[in-house]
Amino acid sequence: VFVLNKLIEMYGKCGSARHAQQVFDEIQAKDSYTWVMLISAYAHNKQLVEAKRFFDELPEQCPVASNIMLSAYARAGYLEAAKLVFDQMAEKTPVSWSAMLSAYFQNGHLEAAKEIFSSMPERSITSWNAMLTAYAQAGHLEDAKLTFDSTPGKNLVSWNAILTAYAQSGHLQEAEYLFAQMPAWDLVTWTTLLTGYTYRSQLEPAAALYADMPEWDPYSSTAMLTAYAQAEHIDDAKRIYHQFPEQD
RNA sequence: GUACACUGGA
Image 1 (cartoon, helix red, strand yellow):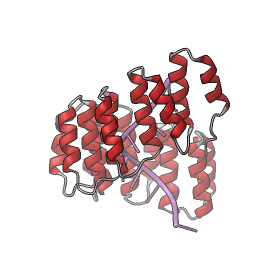
Image 2 (cartoon, rainbow, N blue to C red; image 1 turned 60 degrees about the vertical axis):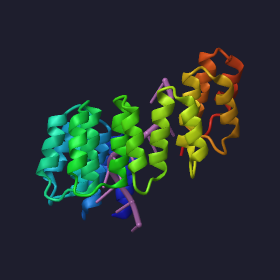
Image 3 (tube, rainbow, N blue to C red; image 1 turned 90 degrees about the vertical axis):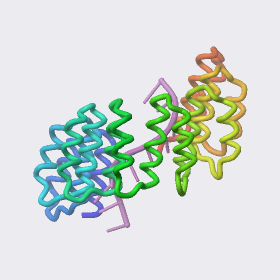
Image 4 (cartoon, chains in turn brown, blue; image 1 turned 120 degrees about the vertical axis):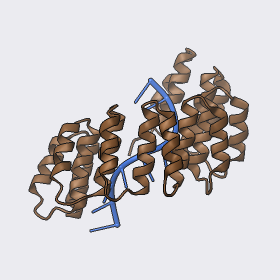
């Protein structure tokens, strides 16, 4: 079952829910992973009706499956449906709470996001990060910073999220200051600062940062490529294109 | 041993 579950997951990520379904159908001893992988495959391929069909056929309650449906509805803009799934959950996990928080702010309801954040039984690091992002995307940079400062046990996502808040609002100096303070860096960190430079048409620092990065991925390379393209540095853009990193 | 959520490009 383990290997077949992995196969369903793989088909789902390749965008082939049909093949995922075929594997699912042939599995005799389905476990909760089997169901979740199939529902996830449909959900991530925007086939919400199919996802719901199997969600309803689940032999027993599964919080992970509910979380997937909740997020999928929210991403598609069906906030009411997301809320319904959330309310009907017998056992809400920390993921359920942060997913619901994200559901609200993704659909423009900052107040509701704040309410759920304050009414949560326990605030996971993910919920702190989601709240920070909600403020940032609503343009409330001060509140985002306050949230960041209050976050207990900050992880790399927390740091990247506040960096994003500054970089995307054009506050490059604050972003650079944060960057220097960070306890660790990853591809998200570098790409965030890189696009911050690009946003302010600072091609040279962007290029210098890109050259100093210890590794690259399609996201970072695309960012650099479009930065060069926008500045009409076609030869540099070509160079990036021909060195494009592999995707795993 | 495998699943869901929070941060980066187009």
